[in-house]
Amino acid sequence: MNMFAQTQALFSPTYWRNRLAPTPSPRLNLTHGVILYLEDINVSFDGFKALNNLNLYINQGELRCIIGPNGAGKSTMMDVITGKTRPDTGSAWFGQSINLLEHDEPEIAEAGIGRKFQKPTVFETLTVQENLELAMAGPKGVWATFRARLQGEDKDYLDQILLLIGLVAERQRLAGVLSHGQKQWLEIGMLLMQRPQLLLVDEPVAGMTHQEMERTAELLTSLAGQHSVVVVEHDMDFVRSIANKVTVLHQGSVLAEGSMAQVQADPKVIEVYLGEAAC
Amino acid sequence: MLLKSIWRDKLGLGLLALILLATVYVVLANQLFDPSHPLYVGTNTVTLLGKYLCYALLALAVDLVWGYLGILSLGHGAFFALGGYAMGMYLMRQIGPRGVYGDPVLPDFMVFLNWHELPWFWSGFNHFPFALLMVGLVPGLLALVFGFLAFRSRVTGVYLSIMTQALTYALMLAFFRNEMGFGGNNGLTDFKDLLGFDLTADSTRLALFAASAIALVLGYLACRIIVESRLGKVAIAIRDAEMRTRFIGYRVEYVKLAIFVFSAMLAGLAGALYVPQVGIINPGEFSPLNSIELVIWVAVGGRATLYGAIVGALLVNYAKSVFTGILPDEWLYALGALFVLVTLFLPKGVTGWLNRKEAMA
Image (cartoon, rainbow over all chains, first blue to last red; front, top):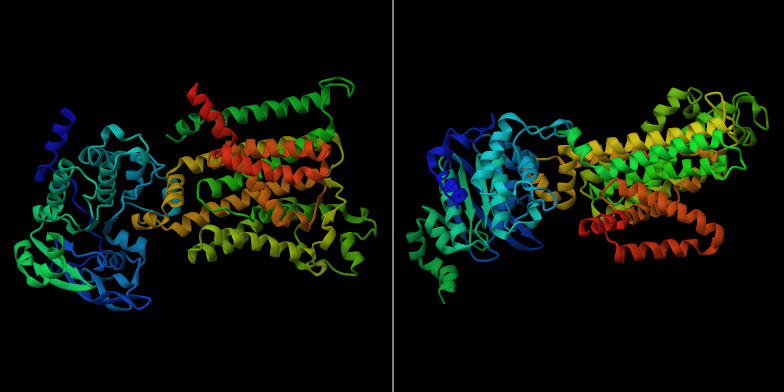
């Protein structure tokens, strides 16, 4: 219990503000205050339009929630941003200077976009510590990786992340034996190890208990400001508790955008999404 | 940190110690005891054991890419054979004028084919250091080119396995051709000496056997260091969730390439030690069946342990020697049955089974 109290204390925003400061990529240009531009993105799979003229702008330091029914294109959008899927047309920019469509996954990760997947995909046959170690920002070349040892500042940072995600006692255990909620947290920890500018978080609270959910909400809100955070989530209570701005996707394009209250009042949104959930 | 993790590998270190002790014993027993003595180890047995050790080194190379990187290579026999051919070419050049046709430079098969000068790719092989370099370089280069093309196109799983199988098959067909300049069907044989030492002499055979044991120990330690480094952890990450590893920022194809090339060079070294002990290298070594068989050794021993590969190779090959002596025709069935049984009942191989028994006790 003491452990838990200790962990709780760590959630004060000021404590983390300095420690989790991302290391900005020298190439990232944020002079206009917008960290992500998606313009007229179209993606189709065998004739099915997954994204249809999608336009989305994320401001620096913003915490944005994306909601939408299944098949609305949320995951495809994430795939486009992280370089997994190439759009048929459109443009995607990270800040003013980095064209995301010209880079592949490792380059985009290195530029400062981190992604947490919908299904927690931690490396199950590695220990918790090893999982975090691999995710750590730094040189990722073959030789550098072979020579790499965990020490000094990196080790301190890793210890802090372990404390933050409440897995200190599990550090030497295999990630595969963690509970579902713990895996989600480990994955968030891995994301933070990368010190990204922009965090893409896909369904962070799926399978979490209510208490875990609250801690996650606190964590994500404390990250906003210095990081820009995009959260895709189905759980409406959770979205309500963290978001000041919500984007609703439907059939591959933006249906509505605004505060949770505005969006909920929008008749189009009620029809396609919230209405379904209500009945 | 690294030394500590190597030290923690008790099973592996125990096995290495056992191999080294056995090596010392075999060498001493062969030299000190009279052939009638019950503890005497005959020279033929020494050579047989040396062959097993080469196979164990080859299995180690396969386990490194299969167990830790998830690449089921069904073509590792190709790298083994290429290393063997490089060594064979040196041994051929050493024959000199002692060949059947007595040509001072050309190996017998070239005289037989009515060739008048040495093909360009045979030059330099009269120097041992050059040949040794080629033992690593040729398999390494093939792995580099093959791996670069395959990994960059993100070919994985069973498709990659089929491609490796095709690679070794294609090489077998190519080496069967006389025009290739590697002795065709018959391959390279009739070796006389290595570095001036007579290959039929007991002392040379013992030295080759000991060299195989030392190569196996060093190869094991090198693999262990790789596996325990962060690179090894990245390899496991790639094996279990390749896409995720990319999103963390690792260049998956380069990691694969580096370990695959290292593994191929290790296989080449095994082949180079194998050839002077068995006295022949021919295209049969490229046979896809060989490559499949050696995957079975690893599976039997237990993959992703490294020591399991050694145990499996020694165990299966010993069984093969015994079985083919008693029931020569049934061996392939026995091998197939062994693979099925191990997959069904010992999914983690013999060493996995032993580990579990130990954990339960």
